[in-house]
Length: 519
Image 1 (cartoon, rainbow, N blue to C red):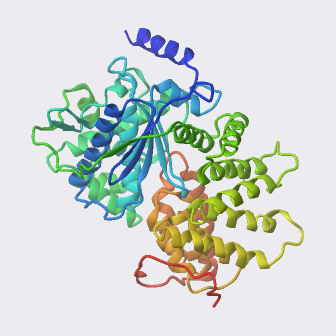
Image 2: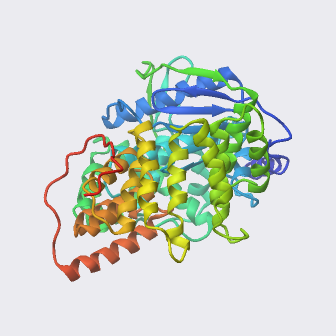
Image 3: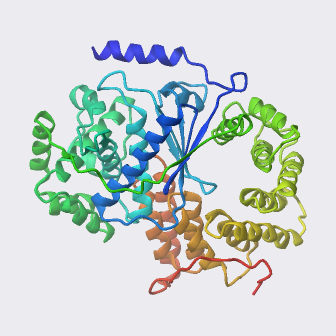
């Protein structure tokens, strides 16, 4: 049965062609408290989905005692018609991806699909989205270092949540999409599970996720409801060896392994409530025009590097219309900016097309946040590629970063770019620290902002603060290796200079930057 279902899924992928410019689609937009959701499907389906993701956010906050954010940096979700359409966005090689998430200082986003799973072993779009949102939620609410098994086990555990039309909701259900790996995949020894990254063959990586889910599920469904995990993570944060911390909280590791083996062969339980969950239920759905529908789709293709030449042609066509918008010019400028950096660009680092498009965007909408940021970025490119850049460009770029900040004081990217320009220039400014910290708090999931703040701490001699910031992502199986390498470098620098860390924490407020403040 498993083989037949896998063949059916593969056939579905092979038959799919991404719906691009030749086949126009109508998109809808749903605005909620924590999310902006775009869908190329029906309005009612989108409305139901928007309520569901807000319910999931509320459930996560209920489970982990976190209050809703008053002014959240909302996550954007693109909801496509099938798993194959999502997979097609990721490139020419079929990876069987049903959904994905990208942490980005421009604005983090996730892509999911509406397709119903073919069988219990199939990974559906909702499960993938909930898995990825669990990571997003963790980075925003639990700034502590966790190992790979718990990072992924936690996301797998949360990802099986479900909400029914009668108000019933379920939490901690069995991860049926991991059945195959747990039953027929390689066994991951407990000491390897607790200390290693998922690596090796695809079968072993999948098995790692399965066993990570099983251990997390077992510990959360124990009598203390996961308090052991909380104490274990606290020990790790104190620098205790992972195996020592595990044995202190979970008991003898050989006994733990036997207990886990027995658990996956037994009958698992989950939590079900007939009491409707209390959530922020205000959802507004808007039908987008043909123009805006095309722009949403092309914007997604631009951000995922999908067929850039065709995307450029279609964006250019939108900018040539008499009703062309600032957003269309911005999307074209952002694509041209990326293209100018590619090795295939001839000449490379020629930003003429990007600057022309972004100037048009700013002419139509002077307070366009991301267009102002991009203009500032373009102005600073000579410091990376020219022999004798004009130092006056530093101040000119900051005018645009400050304009973006005035347009949206809570957007993290203008703050980060403004502060980072001083670090790049090697110039002191009283606003740099607070701007860097506030930018990071706006999108702690975005590694560029995390590394930026770590670099600032290191430049101030506060190596321990920089290291603690990077430890949070060091256990991530997807991009933790770079953090681990940088931590080792910072430890060497710290030990060579002696301790110089600052005491206490800095009190943060919303930052408004002044481009003329050069003290």
